[in-house]
Length: 483
Image (cartoon, rainbow, N blue to C red; front, side):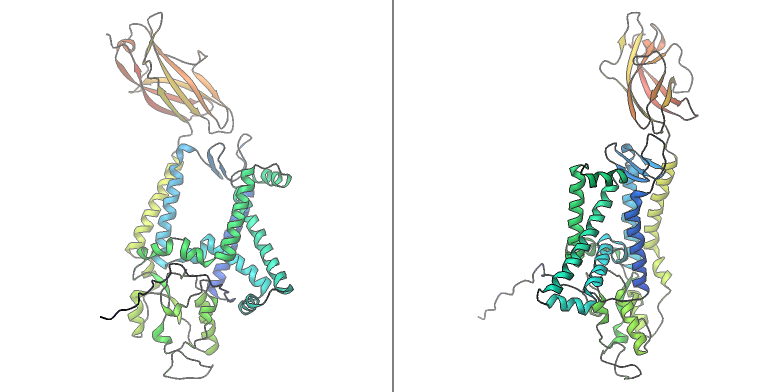
């Protein structure tokens, strides 16, 4: 009997080999630069935009006010009980990710993911300080001397400053930005602010400067989920090996009918931020950033070959292109039942949120009958019910609300007295941007139908005395049940 040595399984984690992408220019690289500038601009500038909401409300356009449990977005104010708006936006974000992945692969990862954006920024700094790909490789292999220490110290210092700006911008979304900035420099800010900035700084520094593609490969679950979102119509970056093979060296003007268009220049590999060779086929690490397309097109121009050796294509078009045909129109791949379904769901939720936003009542209240006791018999035989009334003033000024009671049919209720705790009046003033809890008393005269009935349905109306805004809620009046 022969024996074989046990085969060790491959490691679950491979030690990181530093990747030094080469600088490249082209349509996709320009698109990435434009999106990077726009997204970083939005992130860093937004906390400083002002929006006048009145004297009693914050004037920061976008603010997550955790202390008062509210979210402000320009003219929109979301209260805790309206968290369904946030949930709806998160669902829209998920469906949007499904939509883009189904249409064009991991375009989110390649162009808009924060990990990609900040990594691009860090690589830009690295290239500015240490030089392009070859210079950075030489510096890596170089022994530690004054030049290497100077360049590494400069690079890391800039990276840390970017990390501090990133963490600082993040905390500015949770409190008034100018006030917090002053407090941070004077030492008056809360420890939570300093801790948050420190954590965000270190994570940005580590993820963008050192982990980079490791986050995408090992930490992010999306590469493993994307396969379920893609099909044969999904546009992905691919190498047209039927045109490029067999590969070999070729100079401009030369023609070899036995050789493909690929001259094995490694340009596509050298510019890839994930360190993969797209000519090896589809790989989990590919983030669909398109830089290999720019690099290959640039090389095809140099040797006088047509562009498109590497490009976006759908698996459904592969056989057609191999036979020398032309691929289908790109819009036929994008607008198909699957993507239209995702878009329909995404749009429906968005429209629903907008409708719900504009249908919100400007008056927000709830009324809860006390259960213990259900009613109280007064000295004169009248029956009193006690309620807890919560009124929320969303305006920027004091607002006076009037309370009234009618039957569920809208008709007045004879003999029913309405008054608030500590007052005989039926009005209450609520300070701006606050919720007031108030006792509400309803009394029915002795012997009246309300007093002797077991239970009577009523409708409570709240009206803003300074405007025409009003809202209602159903409640009940509990009687003795002894007719």
